[in-house]
Each structure stands twice: as C-alpha cells, then as structure tokens.
Image (cartoon, rainbow, N blue to C red; front, side, top):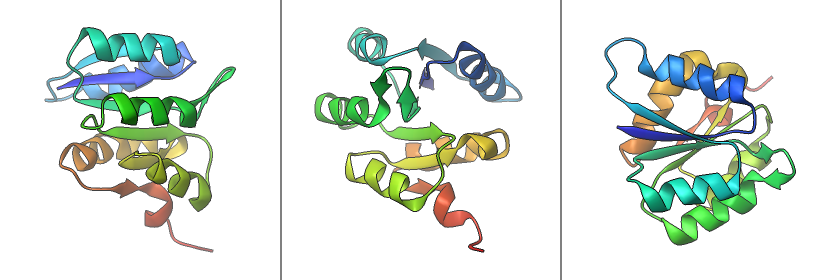
Length: 132
C-alpha cells in the first residue's frame, strides 16, 4: 500500500510514517507539504490512499481536496486534522473525502481509519465520539 501524507508539518508526517510502518503493515509513505507537491506525487506514482490536513500553511486542505477529487476521484482521501466539529467532517465528505480523523485520536485510530476508507467505507471520528 502506498500512502501519500499531505501535511505542512514535517514532524507530523514522520509520525504518521513511523506509525503506519510499525508492526506487520507493508506500506510505502510518500510525503507532501502542500498542494503542488501532492498533485505532483499523484501524477508521478500510484497512490492508494491520501491523508490530508485541513490547513496547509497558507493553503486550504479543502481546496486541495476538491482538486484531488476532480483529478483522481478513485483515490480515497482521509482528512487528518486537529479541527473538531461535525461541520468540518461534513464539508470534507461533500468535497469527496471518504474519512475524517482528528489528529488527537490518530495514534490509536489511524490504521483502522485507513483500512476503512481503503475498503470503500466512510470513517468519521466525529460520529464515533460520544456526544456530551
């Protein structure tokens, strides 16, 4: 499995790489810090799944999601962000994301969330959390 991690923070990209390559998972991690790099990676190589941050420095992850979905509609995208709230998850789904995972849950949920979106199912950490 080839995963493209799109996040403007190198430390977080490395954390995702370490997490996904631990254990028995066989995967290759490609990295992009912004939209131009992400779209270039999608053109240059086969990508099975993308994790995408909502905020990419001066870029909008939602704008990039729209472009990815238009150009590569078959590549599942899992939004991976610190932003909580059902409205962000819903906006992401409306633009083509198959999943939404908060970064504060990522270590325990990321492999499961990736498996879900790869299988064609929708993953939403906001819907899985108990409401207070």
